[in-house]
Image (cartoon, rainbow, N blue to C red):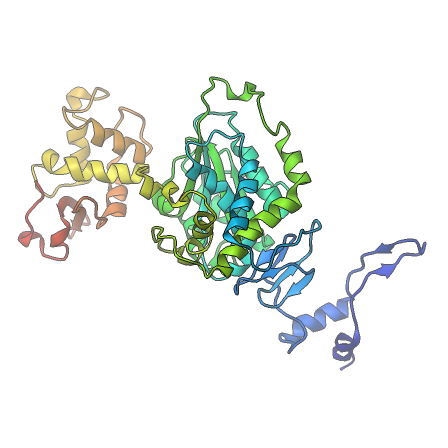
Length: 465
C-alpha cells in the first residue's frame, strides 16, 4: 500500500548535488521501479515508450512532432539534439522543390550514376524522420554501392545518419554467419536502434533474419546473445549497407534500394575538387536547415493530399512507397524506385543460377527427371575433370559453382546442389519452374516443367524442351 502510494505521489527529477552548484541525474528509487513493474498497467499515467528521437518527426496523421517530451500519438519521446527551424504548416510544392535542392547539396560531390541513385540516400533521411509515423509498416534497406574504394560510400551513410539522428552511426562489419547475423540484429532490436549501418559488405548481403526484420511489420522474433529463446522484439531501425559491387542474395533484391557511385578516376581517393571538402563538418553545421528541408517535403506532400505520382507498387512496402518515394517525385525529384534491383534488371546469384538451370537442364538431361548427382557428373565428366565445361553448359556450371560456393572448375557436392534445387523448387521464371520428387529411399529426382502444369502428376506433364 505504501509503495503504491509512493508511486502515485512521487516525481522522478534531477537532484541538486552537495556543492549546490549544478544539477546531476539521479536514478528513481528501487521501490518505485519495482512498483511500476509489478503494476503492469497504469491508466492515463505511464505510457509505453516505443522509441527515442533526437529529431523532429512525422506523425501518422501527417502532422509534425516538434515539442520536446513524450508524443502520445507515436509513443516516441522527443529529446531534441539541436534547435529546430520552423517548418510551415502548409508548405507548397515550390517550398518542397527548394527543400529538395538543399538536401541534394549534401550529396553533390558523389558521382552517382543517375539522379535516381542520388535520391536513395535522401530517401533514407526522409525515412528516418518519417519512421515514427510509419509504425507497424515496413521500410526497405538502403544499399550504397560503388565500383571501387575511395568513392565515399561510408561518407554518404555518415551524412545520412547525422541529418537523420544527430550523429554519425556506429558501423558494423557484415557477419557472414547467419546465426551471428541474427544475434547482431537482436542486439540492435534490444537497443531500440534507429539506424543499423553495415559497412564494407564484402560477401553477399542478405539472409533470412534480415529479410524477417525488413518485412515483420514492426515486431520480430530474434535470438539474442546469451539466450536460447527468440523473444518477440520491436523493430524500429532502418538498415543501410555499403560496399564495393555489393551482391544481394536471396530475397534481398526485393527488399532493398541500391544507390551506385562510379568515379571516372583511377584513384578516386586522391580527388581534391570537392564543393564540401569536410562534408561531415558542413552537414553538422547545417543540420537544422537540412532537417527542416526534409520535414518540409514530407509535410508539404501530406498537406497536398498525398497525390499519386504514378509510381510502381512495391509489395511489403506499400505505406512507405506511398509516402517517401512519392513525396520526392512530387517535390521534383527522380523516381528512386528505378533503383530497385528487380526493376533495374540487376540479377542476384540465386536468380542467375535459377535462369541457367531452367535454360540448360532440359538439354543436359534429355528432358528426363534425374538426380543432382547425375547432373554434376554430366557437367564434370571424369575425362575433363578440372577442365572446361561441356560445350554449351559454361553458364550453368559457373552459376552452380557460385551459388554452392564451389571452387571455380571444381564440382560442388551433390548434397549442396540438391539443397539449392530444393530451395528454388516451384519458383517460376520465364514461364518455367523446377520440380522434384523423392522415391521411397529418399532419393530426389528433378526436372524442368512449364509453370502451366504445376500440380499435375508427372506422367501428365510434358517436359520442357
